[in-house]
Amino acid sequence: MTISVVDLFSIGIGPSSSHTVGPMKAAKLFLEHGNVHAGDHVEIILHGSLAATGKGHGTDRAVLLGLAGLDPATVDPAQEPTPGADVEPTGCINGIFYSIVFDPTPLPEHPNGLSFSCNDVSWRYFSVGGGFVLREDEMANQAAAGAAAVAVSAQSLPFPFTTSTQLLQVCADSGLSIPAIMRANEEVLHGDFRVMSDHLDRVWATMQECVKAGMRTSGILPGGLGVQRRAADLYKRLASPKSAFGFDALAGMEWINLYALAVNEENAAGGRVVTAPTNGAAGIIPAVMHYIRDFCAPKNEKWPREFLLAAGAVGMIIKENASISGAEVGCQGEVGSAAAMAAAGLCQVIGGTPKQVENAAEIALEHNLGLTCDPVGGLVQIPCIERNAIAAVKAVNAARLALHGSGVHRVTLDDAVATMAATGHDMMSKYKETATGGLAVMLGLPVTITEC
Image (cartoon, rainbow, N blue to C red; front, top):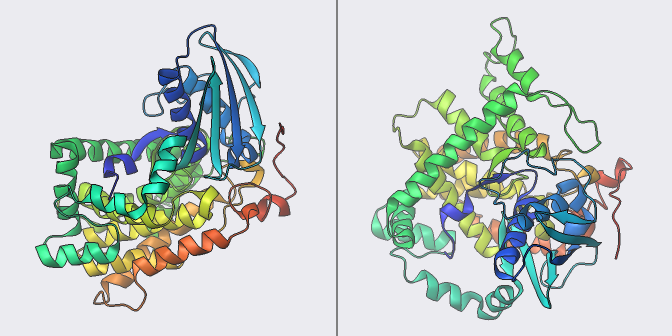
């Protein structure tokens, strides 16, 4: 367990954690540590998937915002260059001259690579999913250290685990719930449990604001596909006393769909979202949490923290043993991971045991295995927005199925995670966030990029 739940649930802007948030962070890091000053010229090369779908994901805009010293957590989502605006490949921002080159050839270390050069200083970064960024030397050190270094670093925690098998054993030995295990570890990581709890409270508040913004905003999403925002109209329909929907036997599902659509439309428009665990899958966990708030009548007022801690444990296990990057393993790593995390959180809040929580996560992930990442036009819109709604409903079903069982099941979460990693390794690159296969090609809208 090498990361914190604070890192896993970060606050940023859309439309992509790996293609927008990560590159923005990388550019800001180079600005701060690469001896860059006003009047200097910075050459930026986007490699692999960042080049293939960088225009649609706003990667060029993101690196310019980073060079301007802005941070994803605090930047105004409408900051110029505005979402969807054309970005010149050469120019000046905040006194720094720049040139951006799109190179679709991936670097060997990871599909999402960025190179920065200025004043004889050249650094490479890798955006490895969920907004996490590693510099080239950090990537190499991590690969060389392997599992041994992870085991050593985890030993400083009171309840170390890197797999679901270890987590369940820790719960059995200690008699503690998964959120209690997470709280104890987070307190050691931060020196004060309030760092974690305050952050999770901000995460839940941001999720609610994002849903509200999505439900009150209509119009066409940027990017050129002409995708109509639907959440505002759907909200009016469901909330109307005369509506045939929203108050029948499937009311919960209708509202889950609405909440997920609202978040992912905000994300596609470059709005403020919570990376959970990625931006492309940002609507699943908020949708399920709103379902709990509106349909489950939770008795414990701290249930959002309990949810996010249980979900975070699952996210850490997946990130440690597979990937949450669509460019690395396809959408199973984004939507599949988010569905597993949401199922775990819901099962925890509605009374599941640690074994049932693990089972819920396994069910949700198992039934997203093989999911490809083929965004039309390189935009996080089709099929991404609807996919979040479908996966959120699937997460609720997985949690309820697990709650009806004893927690004993043949396929473990570890099995599903290992299968996801193997499937992602075998998946052709055209189905992994390059917009060169699947729906992206079937609709005749491949991404146009400038090759170096």
